[in-house]
Length: 406
Image (cartoon, rainbow, N blue to C red; front, side):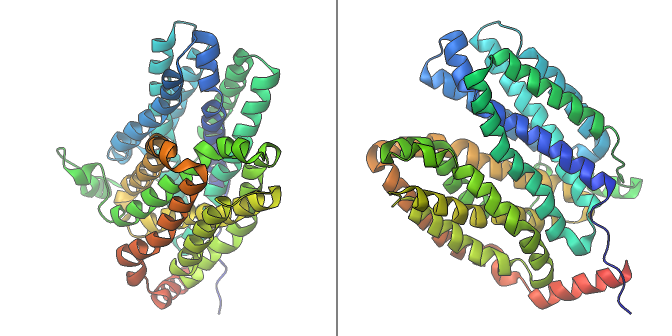
């Protein structure tokens, strides 16, 4: 007799996904407005303005690095709530006008608290999702971030054109307060004392900051995120050069729609067929999308490339996160989650600076040719670090067995 599927859309799953949405929305909204704020408010140089944007990601990386090893010792819910409280307090500090150095310190601390809160939310949601629906559940959870990456920059650009920066900060503060209040209501199953003792990490070993089982797939994440950062950072400049500015404003909207349409299917397919069934086509779609972007001479070409990159990178992102969590024992789940995001953020955060050094020599079009080629070659990297070990039959059997036992 077939047992009912384990429930995914629980109250706690919706709460944590909502918190993740608000945090990511604030992150991307401020990402597209803070450089302009630094220039207008403090007459910052271009390099200072870039640092105001980038130092946030550095703070996030450091926050993830240290909270990953301590989250279960502190408590998963307590880590989330403390992170959200400090995140909201720091958001209110943007109202203080005390010079560019003070702004840089504020941005760094804000990044630290985001790293803390988002690692906690990722760990909590991984423990909430039934094992038999991990791929599907993480796919839906990461859709909250995907929506925010499309809506955040859109709201930020609209507000920067039509309101003051004080209004932008007030809006972010309200979102922070909402996320704090709903985050406080989530019910979390913490580790037992025996699991805590097992998870206890003494000293400053690498395994205390990076989960070894998640490290191989995290290298793949770093590679594709590095390539995707070329789109995040330079699509507007490329569009100006190609005279496709109007079309470029819809690029991330098309990207988000492609991800939203595909995620419900790809997450479930991963659980049934295994990760390779999603990952190999995703590499081809993302690589092909970047190569198509390099040839963009019309709005249609630009937007089709956005859809292909969304289908590729968007699904790779959730699939690799699910792989990292599935490979790791429960008591190391927090560390696996932070390891995944550390490598994702490193690719997205340091990519723009390194690629910016290449652009004077390559131009934007050739840059996208290189990035598309790297993604396609990364299929080989994925095959050796995970693909050849993936057993769809075993995965399917484990899923069905687990479903029957729920």
